[in-house]
View (cartoon, rainbow, N blue to C red):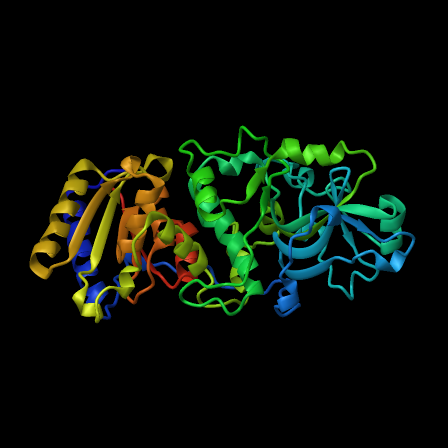
Length: 448
C-alpha cells in the first residue's frame, strides 16, 4: 500500500481533473509527471514472421467420423508436411503437427526451405520459471518436447496412418504459475493468441465479421485440471462466453496421448504459445508475454470479433453507434476502486477527493461519471463497463482489464495510478496492449 501526502493528494486530484477535461476536447502537452505510456521501442531481432498470405483453402472443414484416420500406406511422399503460417519467438501458428508419445513432431524434408523456426524459439521444457542460477538451462526444450523429422522418419515412426485431431488447437505450453490471475490470461495469453490467429484473415471488419473458425480446444500440457482455473473463475467463464463449443484439455488428457502405445495423431492446425520461448528472445526484462506479436501484420479491426461476441453475450449495442452524431452521447468516465498489484491502493482520502473532483466534472460539463468496486463486479459487469466507458481510471492491476472491451473512439483512454518513484519504474503491461488497440494510456505516479 502506498500513501500520498496532503499536498501531493491535492496536486494529483487537481491534475487528474484538468487532464480528463482537456483529454476529451483538446490537444494538451502532458507534463513530465504524467507519462504517456508507449510500447517499448522495437529493436532489431532475428525473427521470422509471416511467410504465407491468407488462403481461402486454409479454412478447415471438420471430418466425418469415418475420416478421422489419415492413411498414406507405404507412400512416403503422401505424409503431410508441416506448414508454418506465422512465427515470432513464443508464438507459432502451423498446420499438420504430429503428436506421438507426448512429443510434438514437425515434419519437413527441407527445414530451411520450409522456414521451420529453431525449436528453442517455439517451445521450452514447460517447467516453472524460477529466476535462479541454472534455471535457464533447465527450461531449454529436449527431444521429449519437440523434434523436427523428415517424412521418411515420420513413416518409420508412425506407420501407414495417423489419427486426425480436427480443427484448430490453441496449445498453451507454460506452467500453472501464470494462471494464478485472470489478468495474465486475458491481457497476455488470450490477447497474444488472437493477435496471432487473426492474421489469417486480413478482411476482419469493424463489425467483427471474420471467416476464421473458432478454436475447438485449448490444450494445457503442463497444467493439471485443478490448476488452470483462476481464483475468481473468470477464465472458464470467459472461454465459455467466447468459444462455447471449445473444451479445455489439461495435462491429464495430454498424458493420454502418451499412453496410446504406437498410435500417433496429426493436428490440423496448432497455435503454440510458450512464454519462455518469447522471454529468451526479448531484450526487455519482464516484457509482456505477447509483446512480440505486435510485429504481425493484421486487420486494424483484428480484436473486434472478440469484443463483439462478448458484447452480444451480455446484450446491448455498441455505444459508438448511439445517436446520429457523436455530440449527442455523454462521455463516460469510469473509476474502478480496487487493490492493485502488490497491494497498491489509493489512500482513503485520495479516493474520496478523486470521486469529488470527478463529480464536479459531471456537474459542470455533463460528463457521465461512474464509480465501481472491483470485487463486486461480475464478468458480465466488467464487459458492460468496458463497452460503455470512454475513459477508465484505476490503480495498476486487474481493475484496468475492462479497457479490453472498450469501444474505439478518439477519446478512448486508460489512466493508470501507480506508486513508481520514476518514469522507468512505470508498468508497461497494459500500455502496449492499449496501444495495439488504439487506446491512449497514461500513468500518474508518485508516493508520499
